[in-house]
Length: 310
Image (cartoon, rainbow, N blue to C red):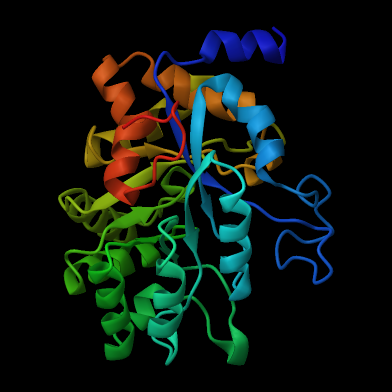
């Protein structure tokens, strides 16, 4: 089957909001913080026109950009890019909670309605040796105060690169700031501990998060590499998807492709195929929730084009 035939077979009869793409321009004079030059699959400019050519054939009508840089001015760079292309319905930026100028930076970027939140956790090494360690920093009063400020603006918090420690940190964050909307990115790729005590603690935390109405899970970064190959059979992934769906339910799972990082595993059509095949067996109402309705609840993204859903 050609890619065009694959797209036609998978195109949903409902609109799709892709809640996780990255944008960068490797040709900028200052370069990019990510991806590294030694990753030829990724080190090529990723802008809306390139994404559009890949994704719209699968019913994608809007996308949310997720930060790919801890440089402050790259928040503005993304907003400037988004202003020129209506396929972008929001961006999740990067400003550091718990620092003296967080409030000033939040006020600056939040003036733009496309700015829908920030990302933090297992992500960047900051100047001065600081790391995005959520489980550690949630104990700091100034950090919690900034997250409360974030929540008061109606913006949300995305996480990154999940592991059991981060999941525990997200639970503590939800305890500290109950009204903060939290999106757990890429949870399907988490390596579940094999030791019984650690495994049980992880599932206890995850199930508790599953009870919180303000916590969402991005069913993204699903594909895995096993013995040098990436299985493209849904049955290989079904157990993980069933488990996460069972814990978080129909109302708090959302679609994200992780493009172009997903190219490290497979091209966009194959990335989309796994989740499309899985969700297509569910009722239409559930498909709509996964492909766009839940993302509106999680991000309050901005409709910018007529083909985007209300």
